[in-house]
Image (cartoon, rainbow, N blue to C red):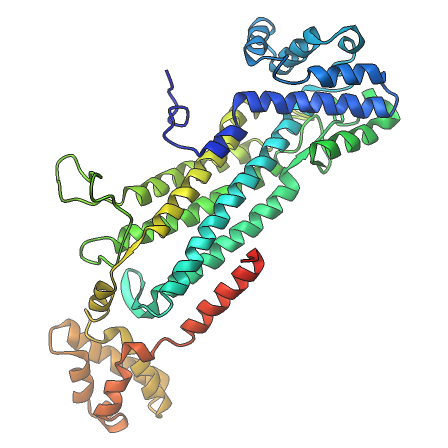
Length: 452
């Protein structure tokens, strides 16, 4: 019976789950054994016939997960269990050369590098789909005016398209980071017990070069018995960074879905979906909450990844058990989050009428910066203008009339700005600055980068 929600099918896309499937992991390990044998044969370190035999048997048709488990239960060593399982299915020509010149982490870390490369490919594909959805929304809502909030308070006028454009560039940066992390994390090593390649002699580096090239990996930059764990710590940090941005989007949707704001709403299947077991009317933002919840878990993996860096001497085993969780879970959960957020963005319900209503809630106070700036332009001085407008705003908070009324009643304001001019200054639609330009540039730059 499954205990982990991932195994129970609650989280994880089919593509990403496949990358970290136990059989796929075993096949990657067998691929390393076969690639190393072929490289050694090319260089004359082992007989060609041995490499051919090992290669022909290094697959799941011959080496079974259950057999590897059975051997491991007996000998207490996971990699040696794979080696023995492969050895016992090889004929005489290959049997004596399985795992020649290798150590466990030549197989383990290189197999991990292969998984990382595939996982990044899956995640990249998901991330680009999210970016495409964000791009569409940035264009669609380029001109939808709404309140921009700082500290949860109205601060200035923006458009919904600007929010999406900010997110577009943020997730494009995540794509850049992911690609850069791949260059350092999708790596392998085949240099033996302490990273010197001594068992393979002068040909060690050439064996590593040939084998890793065949496997589609680059050699890790200076190793001991293991690939140094700063590599994996950086990778998981990149994933956690992306998770935090996804949480930011989820939090924004949740806040703007509050009934008293109600500017956005995540998709909801009105014909069947239930929001609450007690309150029939509720439409809870459960998808956004799921994203926020999983982000906390993905971020937590960074702690473990950083604690794996200070291994003893040329290696110890304190990283091994936890890495069976951290790397697969970080990728699986993050890919789930990205796909969930894509569903949210694609199905997002937008309420322009509520955005307009909320914009007008403070009766023009959201344009106080504009009025203060205009007064400064007309000679009052920046600090004096700020204080004058602040005092007028406080009257509004005390219930002493509208912002416009308070401004008109002030003799300094009325001397410098006419009522007609003030009316124009308090028009939300004319105080967007370079908003549309920023959106257009973000969209164009991203589309060009993604060849869309």
